[in-house]
Image (tube, rainbow, N blue to C red; front, side, top):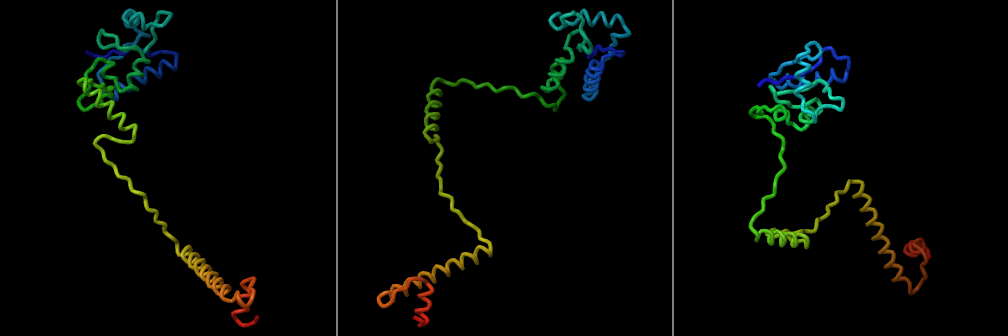
Length: 199
């Protein structure tokens, strides 16, 4: 069957013109065969469209606005339902046409099949084990991550200087303890003077 698009070629409404262009342009892009039937210049087309749009699809005033889409004699929908089908990648289904080979089909929700009654208990046990931090049939070993810090040459120099200063402090403390019996050394300067023989 041929898709029939009822439209008004001389419509004064820019919204209607855009909707008509959207439908026709999309059908052309998909290379779907269609006929344009003008309701503005042909009274028979207008009457047929008005009579064949289902009552629940007509607006409150009873006069459906173009574009209206039919597959032969079967009503497909108006622009809003066409737009929804386009957004959901279901245009061929909306038009009542088979999808071309290799076309992207909309994803269907997956259903969970119920298995034998014993499966429910296994699922409950697995859920309980998972909530306790165990996974059935899964053995995981965790290792403590080892931190390796890469140092820049500048950091290495700084560390070496700190190490040398600490060693000097330690040596000075040892000398202070050894000499503590004979002198009282209050500061590093006193220690240096003492070691140089100035005290």
